[in-house]
Length: 247
Ligand SMILES: NC(=O)c1ccc[n+]([C@@H]2O[C@H](COP(=O)([O-])OP(=O)(O)OC[C@H]3O[C@@H](n4cnc5c(N)ncnc54)[C@H](O)[C@@H]3O)[C@@H](O)[C@H]2O)c1
Image (tube, protein in one colour):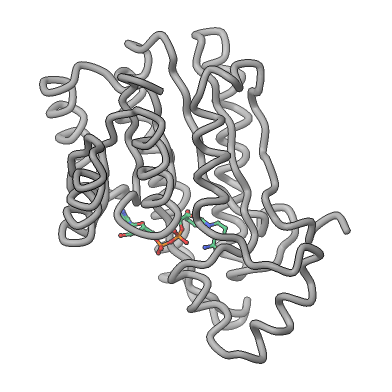
C-alpha cells in the first residue's frame, strides 16, 4: 500500500484505530476522521511515533457539512483518496420494547445515514484514484439478528444493502466495494454489550474458536481488501466470527 491514501472514519478508537495502524504498517498514509478530536489526535501521535504518516480530520458522519469540509481540505492537501474505510458506528443495546423513536433515529442516523453521507462526500476523491477501494465495517448482527438490538441490526442490514448496490454501480468504474461483518470484537462496544464475567463466559461457549476477536483481526482483512491482492473480491459481505454463525 505504499503511497496509497486511506481515510478511516471512526479511526480514533477500537476497530478503526487498528485498521489505521495496520494500513500505516503496510505503507499507506492514513487520515483519521473521527468525531473525537482528543482520541483522534492521540492515535495520530501514536502512528507518527511508529514512523507512519497520519493526520486527523474532525468529522461527524451525520453532519454532511463537516464531511465536505474534510473532503475539500484533503483535496488541497493530498489530492485524492485511494481507500475509504466506512467504520464509524455506535451500538446501544436495547430490547425491542425499550427502543423508542429517538433511539431508533440516533442509531440509524449514525450507522446507516452516516455511511451513505461518508461515501457521498468522498466518492469524487476515490474516483480520482487508480486503486479505489471502499471497505464498510458492517456487523454479523445484520445476518443473525443477534447483538445490539433491532435498531442496530437494521442499520447494519442497511449498510449491507448499500454495499451490494455500490458494488454494482462502482465496479464498472474500477472501485472495489466490500463489507466485513464481525460478530464479537474486543472494543468498548463489546464491554457495553457483555459487561460481566458470566455473560463473557456464556459468549465464549458459543464461539467454536473459543476466542473473542481482536480489532487486529478485522484490520488484517481490511488491509487485504484495500490491497491489490484482493482485486477480484467485490460486492461481498464477509463474516468474521470465529466460526460462530455457521457452526
Ligand atoms: N466491537 C464489535 O464487537 C463490533 C462487532 C460488529 C461490528 N462492529 C462495528 O465496527 C465499527 C467500529 O466499532 P468499534 O467496536 O471499534 O467501536 P468504538 O466505540 O470502539 O469506536 C467507534 C469510533 O467511531 C467514532 N464515532 C462514533 N460516532 C461518530 C460520528 N457520529 N462521527 C464520526 N465518528 C464517530 C468514535 O469516536 C470511535 O472512535 C462500528 O461500525 C461497529 O458497529 C463492532
